[in-house]
Image (cartoon, rainbow, N blue to C red; front, side, top):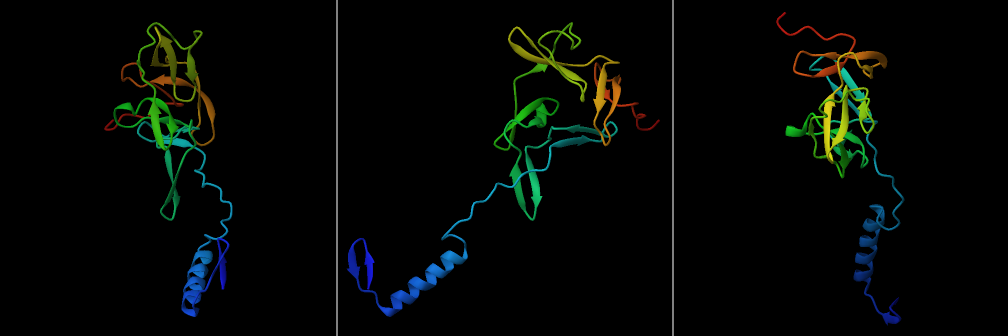
Length: 180
């Protein structure tokens, strides 16, 4: 006899066996008394690009998800700096639920060099952000601007002009173009 909701219920031997078997499976799966678990964490965010020499940007990620191995994946915490995808791939955003959200921004900061009030300098990627008339804009740091290259052992150097418009990179020296 099993008391359920203050009523006596008679259970046959076959039903007891089925109940015990089901309960055993339930508890063996850990569903009876779940243990507290912590969410798997992604490794520290590091973005590496080897198209123009090897450049590593610590604290930034290319993709707001990571592979934990064994087919498992996780998201970087919301707010982790990230590089956009597709048409936004040269823009910086923040991870939000596994997706890089890039704030509306465009190349600009006309007449600025990155030292003005209200500018935010990203010393490891040779760009700075500014706000012009309420709009977020960005610009490459000028050639010769001090920067920190974080590829391997971090070192101080200066932003170098690549020869592609105003683009600058934080490297000791630019690699030679292909075919030369």
